[in-house]
Image (tube, rainbow, N blue to C red; front, side, top):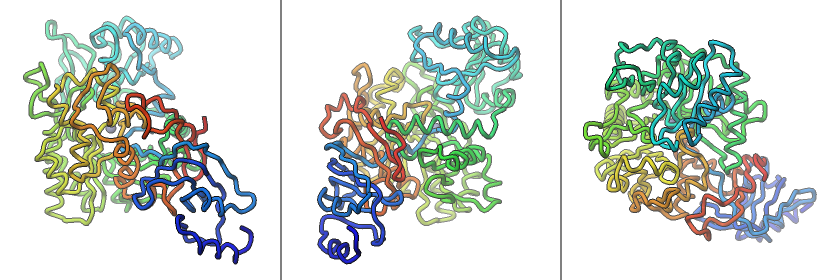
Length: 552
Ligand SMILES: [Zn+2]
């Protein structure tokens, strides 16, 4: 289209195509001959999209969109491939994970001896006296049938302090030197909300430290990351997320340093996903003082909710439950912050206009958190506060009704059933029908999201789809079949619902004229795929803001 008159005439004939109101603009890219599943109910399926300045300029039938092609416009024939909106991971820890991948030993290995070998190798390259750090250790994923012990770590690395994070993030494992450097000995009492393991027979330290007791190590391990390191961590994790089709992620435990790292990565062109950066409650006073609140930022880096933590973890079996863990009759899990603490910090943030996101896994944790939210809203009613329940794993009908009444947003683990199947027996078959409860949430009209919680969970969106649709783990065990949802629902949960959770449903989450051009091109159609192989669907390309962030 070269002259304005022709263009206007042409636009007059357009019925099936909707246009963004910048008529003088030309698209700079057209993707055509695709199976575009838009998640826009007004136009659920399209064949082509035109993109201009990082946004969808037109969405519609091939012929109509191709008619917009002025000379010089790039055109890509999708060959019938399926296109979905870019995936939104509503709860993840990308900044910290990126730094960990840069610096730490990846302990996602299948035997204790393999972990020992990896630690030994790192120790050989580490100056004497400096920490050897590991992450993504999972006690249920080694073939040994037992967790790492202090003896394993002492044998592998006697001369350096060792600190290994469980991938769940709520427990750590240290060798003798590590415990000593952290100031922990056999007489050290458990701090409130924390636990230091001892051998029940001898009283000697076991090497495992849980929940708030991890603070001993936070004080002892020097945080010698440079500003560039933080940016490089975001750069590294950006590439990892982009290749799976993720275009947005919530940073669920953000600090001012993370916020800076995202901005630095954006400025250097290395940020490949849109970051909604939560701020941990410990930093909230200075943020409020500076006049900052949820929503500040732009479409790439935005200040998210204030983050608090009510109870423990699902993968490490410390979530606070009303009915004890299977086979552990006295173990109800851990409450990390008291209701009064949640209320005190929550009140400040709520009044200052912040969204609040509270980690609440067990039914007792969720009940406590809801009580705090209900009180905040009763005392200081705010329009559309979109309270978030991070994870919101173990539910019941009463909790569902209160979540609905409050308009709160649960962010359940998307990949746990598939990936963490071996942990499900601690919860039992009956309870699993009330966990990661997407069917219950959607039936109640609650806008739950897709969320990996990486590193604790895998972040691959196609794995999330398979996990949510089949409720089946890698060994073929079915966990909580009553919570199965359809592929269409799972895609909705992973796209437009994620956008809603960050107040950005008018900006992204569907392929719609005027919205940000965030999309993923898949190698096969998930709507025609056998649900048990969804995870194997390859991502061919990912686009964020009109730019390819990944091409296979
Ligand atoms: Zn988390």
